[in-house]
Image 1 (cartoon, rainbow, N blue to C red):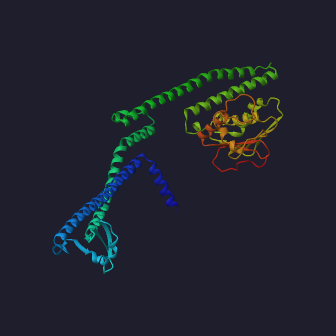
Image 2: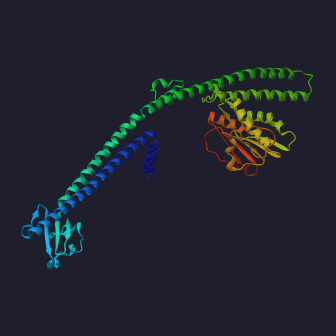
Image 3: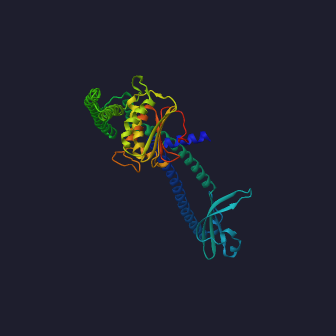
Length: 450
């Protein structure tokens, strides 16, 4: 059963290929044309044969009748090859064979059973005068045999032409699709090599050549856009790092002053943490823009529990005066092979969402083996909407304040980059839970206890 299903899937995929469609179309066209020709030949032969034989029998019958009226003894019963004339006089009409009695003037086709049991077909021409009835019969068994031979010959011709259609269709589809296949092969080679290679010089000035030129123009525009995007990201990251470094160094010097009040010192610490977070975000976004798929840089590892504590402290001002308790439970040590900036950006978005959606209650962050859970007592989410919240520009219901709906989309892109998994689910006791998994081990979708 499985092999039959796999074969059917392969056949469906093959039928969707352009080369297969060309081959099937040509083969079906050739076969249909051959069948149409064979059927037309059979029909025309039978029609013309019946017309010619019928007119010949009528002429012979009239000639036979005229000869009979001139000299009955000479004309009666004289056979001509397979044609035989029979005359019945008026007083012998009762002896006419039953199958002939009700026949009108003209040519008819009848059958008769032979002594050996076979059924034979014959044609009969009828002329009924007042005193004499004339019948002229023609044994058509040889005609039937010739028709059968012609039918067999036409079947053989159809088979031969069907095979020729298949062979020519295969050759023609291969020849027609050769430039397209070559174009696809050069595109694959260019993609694997990672270099832009001109396609148009390798093809003639035809439709495929025009497609190659269009692809060259599109590739040039796309390459230019990517190059400008990379240059812009590099320039922005370089230019932003300088003022952030100035902010960080100035804040550090100000915190070293002994006469500073505690309230001002706390504000400077917040500025320091915000500048550090901005630097981490710049590093993570620059990594995403380059689309580097090699995982952690230089084997850098990060203590997730420490990063979570820093993120909670950094995101705490979002709560303002809301009656929300924040707690961190480290249930297992967790170290991941990734830069701290990447882990911090991913967790900051998850924790920041929990703080924004929770108006009262609690936010609990649990560090477990291989994963981090961010639980909140906010309005919760619908299971069918959980996946859509990771799309760009999609925001959940009930959030207050501005936002572009990009946070969870950035988290998903970072997870795709490092092979992690992130998902949202309703919390059993109310609210929502965000699960960030750093390993591939299967986990329960929703925690069962707080």
